[in-house]
Length: 182
Image (tube, rainbow, N blue to C red; front, side):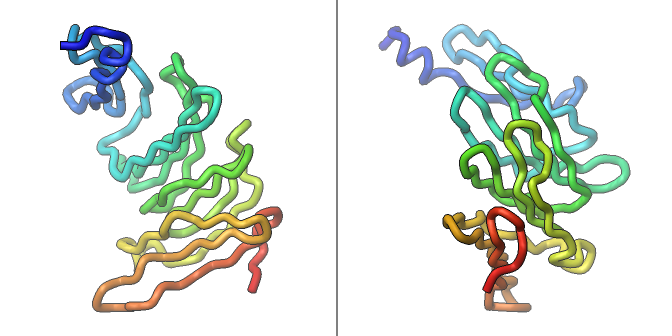
Protein backbone atom coordinates (compact mmCIF):
# COMPACT_ATOMS: atom_id res chain seq x y z
CA UNK A 1 0.00 0.00 0.00
CA UNK A 2 1.41 3.39 -1.02
CA UNK A 3 1.30 6.21 1.51
CA UNK A 4 3.30 8.87 -0.33
CA UNK A 5 1.97 12.29 -1.34
CA UNK A 6 1.05 11.17 -4.85
CA UNK A 7 -1.20 8.46 -3.42
CA UNK A 8 -2.91 11.00 -1.14
CA UNK A 9 -3.56 13.24 -4.15
CA UNK A 10 -4.87 10.24 -6.08
CA UNK A 11 -7.30 9.35 -3.28
CA UNK A 12 -9.05 12.71 -3.26
CA UNK A 13 -12.51 12.62 -4.75
CA UNK A 14 -15.27 15.14 -5.44
CA UNK A 15 -18.72 14.52 -4.05
CA UNK A 16 -21.99 16.41 -4.15
CA UNK A 17 -24.38 16.67 -1.23
CA UNK A 18 -28.01 16.47 -2.30
CA UNK A 19 -29.47 15.81 1.16
CA UNK A 20 -31.44 18.25 3.31
CA UNK A 21 -28.69 20.84 3.34
CA UNK A 22 -28.47 23.62 0.73
CA UNK A 23 -27.93 22.13 -2.73
CA UNK A 24 -24.87 22.56 -4.86
CA UNK A 25 -22.16 22.04 -2.25
CA UNK A 26 -19.24 20.23 -3.88
CA UNK A 27 -16.74 18.80 -1.43
CA UNK A 28 -13.33 17.26 -1.82
CA UNK A 29 -12.54 14.27 0.35
CA UNK A 30 -9.51 12.19 1.15
CA UNK A 31 -10.74 8.60 0.78
CA UNK A 32 -8.16 7.35 3.29
CA UNK A 33 -9.20 9.56 6.25
CA UNK A 34 -12.68 10.41 4.91
CA UNK A 35 -12.19 14.07 5.88
CA UNK A 36 -14.37 16.33 3.73
CA UNK A 37 -13.63 19.91 2.87
CA UNK A 38 -15.92 22.32 1.02
CA UNK A 39 -14.49 22.86 -2.46
CA UNK A 40 -17.14 25.12 -4.02
CA UNK A 41 -20.77 26.02 -3.43
CA UNK A 42 -22.95 26.51 -6.51
CA UNK A 43 -25.91 27.81 -4.41
CA UNK A 44 -28.66 26.19 -6.48
CA UNK A 45 -32.43 25.96 -6.18
CA UNK A 46 -33.94 22.57 -6.93
CA UNK A 47 -31.60 20.65 -9.21
CA UNK A 48 -28.25 20.87 -11.01
CA UNK A 49 -27.80 19.26 -14.41
CA UNK A 50 -25.19 19.22 -17.21
CA UNK A 51 -22.09 20.23 -15.27
CA UNK A 52 -18.88 21.11 -17.12
CA UNK A 53 -15.61 22.08 -15.42
CA UNK A 54 -12.82 23.84 -17.30
CA UNK A 55 -9.43 23.91 -15.54
CA UNK A 56 -7.61 27.21 -16.06
CA UNK A 57 -4.13 28.50 -15.14
CA UNK A 58 -3.47 29.96 -11.69
CA UNK A 59 -5.64 27.38 -9.87
CA UNK A 60 -8.90 28.67 -11.35
CA UNK A 61 -11.88 26.66 -12.55
CA UNK A 62 -14.78 27.70 -14.75
CA UNK A 63 -17.91 25.78 -13.77
CA UNK A 64 -20.88 25.62 -16.15
CA UNK A 65 -24.19 24.06 -15.19
CA UNK A 66 -27.89 24.01 -15.89
CA UNK A 67 -30.05 24.84 -12.87
CA UNK A 68 -33.72 24.06 -12.35
CA UNK A 69 -35.49 26.26 -9.84
CA UNK A 70 -39.05 27.34 -9.02
CA UNK A 71 -39.35 29.79 -11.93
CA UNK A 72 -37.77 27.64 -14.65
CA UNK A 73 -34.38 26.67 -16.05
CA UNK A 74 -31.22 28.73 -16.49
CA UNK A 75 -27.61 28.24 -17.51
CA UNK A 76 -24.99 29.39 -15.01
CA UNK A 77 -21.31 30.20 -15.54
CA UNK A 78 -18.98 30.90 -12.59
CA UNK A 79 -15.25 31.27 -11.99
CA UNK A 80 -13.83 29.75 -8.81
CA UNK A 81 -10.33 29.94 -7.37
CA UNK A 82 -8.57 27.39 -5.21
CA UNK A 83 -9.39 27.70 -1.52
CA UNK A 84 -12.50 29.86 -1.96
CA UNK A 85 -15.93 28.13 -2.12
CA UNK A 86 -17.62 31.31 -3.41
CA UNK A 87 -17.25 32.40 -7.04
CA UNK A 88 -15.08 35.29 -8.19
CA UNK A 89 -17.94 36.08 -10.58
CA UNK A 90 -21.15 34.39 -11.72
CA UNK A 91 -23.16 34.91 -14.91
CA UNK A 92 -26.69 33.59 -15.59
CA UNK A 93 -28.67 33.23 -18.80
CA UNK A 94 -32.35 32.27 -18.84
CA UNK A 95 -31.68 29.64 -21.52
CA UNK A 96 -31.40 25.85 -21.17
CA UNK A 97 -28.71 23.48 -22.44
CA UNK A 98 -25.34 25.08 -21.69
CA UNK A 99 -22.54 23.73 -23.84
CA UNK A 100 -18.95 22.91 -23.05
CA UNK A 101 -16.89 26.14 -22.74
CA UNK A 102 -13.59 26.82 -24.51
CA UNK A 103 -10.96 29.21 -23.11
CA UNK A 104 -8.93 31.46 -25.40
CA UNK A 105 -6.43 33.63 -23.55
CA UNK A 106 -8.26 35.70 -20.94
CA UNK A 107 -11.71 34.99 -22.41
CA UNK A 108 -14.02 32.01 -22.70
CA UNK A 109 -16.54 31.13 -25.41
CA UNK A 110 -19.82 29.80 -24.06
CA UNK A 111 -23.11 28.62 -25.51
CA UNK A 112 -26.66 27.94 -24.45
CA UNK A 113 -29.65 27.01 -26.54
CA UNK A 114 -30.58 30.65 -27.15
CA UNK A 115 -27.21 32.38 -27.38
CA UNK A 116 -23.45 32.22 -27.79
CA UNK A 117 -21.02 34.61 -26.13
CA UNK A 118 -17.44 35.56 -25.42
CA UNK A 119 -16.93 36.28 -21.71
CA UNK A 120 -13.99 37.95 -19.95
CA UNK A 121 -12.41 35.55 -17.46
CA UNK A 122 -11.19 38.53 -15.41
CA UNK A 123 -14.58 39.95 -14.40
CA UNK A 124 -17.27 37.78 -16.06
CA UNK A 125 -18.53 40.61 -18.25
CA UNK A 126 -19.59 39.71 -21.79
CA UNK A 127 -17.25 40.89 -24.55
CA UNK A 128 -20.12 40.14 -26.95
CA UNK A 129 -23.36 38.13 -26.89
CA UNK A 130 -25.37 36.86 -29.86
CA UNK A 131 -28.96 36.02 -28.90
CA UNK A 132 -31.97 34.41 -30.51
CA UNK A 133 -30.22 31.59 -32.36
CA UNK A 134 -32.97 29.07 -31.59
CA UNK A 135 -36.39 29.24 -30.00
CA UNK A 136 -35.64 27.74 -26.57
CA UNK A 137 -39.25 26.63 -26.09
CA UNK A 138 -39.68 25.01 -29.49
CA UNK A 139 -36.23 23.34 -29.57
CA UNK A 140 -35.60 22.78 -25.84
CA UNK A 141 -33.73 19.53 -26.58
CA UNK A 142 -31.21 21.10 -29.00
CA UNK A 143 -27.57 21.48 -27.96
CA UNK A 144 -24.55 23.28 -29.38
CA UNK A 145 -21.23 21.45 -29.64
CA UNK A 146 -18.01 22.79 -28.12
CA UNK A 147 -16.88 25.92 -30.05
CA UNK A 148 -13.90 25.63 -32.37
CA UNK A 149 -11.58 28.65 -32.09
CA UNK A 150 -9.30 29.93 -34.85
CA UNK A 151 -7.38 33.24 -34.94
CA UNK A 152 -9.86 34.72 -37.45
CA UNK A 153 -13.12 32.98 -36.50
CA UNK A 154 -15.04 31.02 -33.88
CA UNK A 155 -17.32 28.26 -35.07
CA UNK A 156 -20.38 27.14 -33.11
CA UNK A 157 -22.07 23.98 -34.46
CA UNK A 158 -25.32 22.47 -33.20
CA UNK A 159 -25.85 18.74 -32.83
CA UNK A 160 -28.11 17.09 -35.41
CA UNK A 161 -31.61 16.08 -34.27
CA UNK A 162 -32.22 12.40 -35.09
CA UNK A 163 -35.45 11.98 -37.04
CA UNK A 164 -35.93 15.75 -37.48
CA UNK A 165 -32.79 17.11 -39.10
CA UNK A 166 -29.72 15.06 -39.94
CA UNK A 167 -27.49 17.99 -40.89
CA UNK A 168 -25.79 20.45 -38.56
CA UNK A 169 -26.06 24.22 -38.59
CA UNK A 170 -22.85 26.22 -38.25
CA UNK A 171 -22.39 29.73 -36.97
CA UNK A 172 -19.12 31.46 -37.99
CA UNK A 173 -18.34 34.55 -35.87
CA UNK A 174 -15.53 37.08 -35.67
CA UNK A 175 -13.72 36.44 -32.35
CA UNK A 176 -13.25 40.17 -31.64
CA UNK A 177 -16.71 41.52 -32.51
CA UNK A 178 -19.01 38.52 -32.60
CA UNK A 179 -20.25 39.54 -36.05
CA UNK A 180 -21.19 36.79 -38.51
CA UNK A 181 -18.55 35.70 -41.01
CA UNK A 182 -18.82 33.66 -44.16
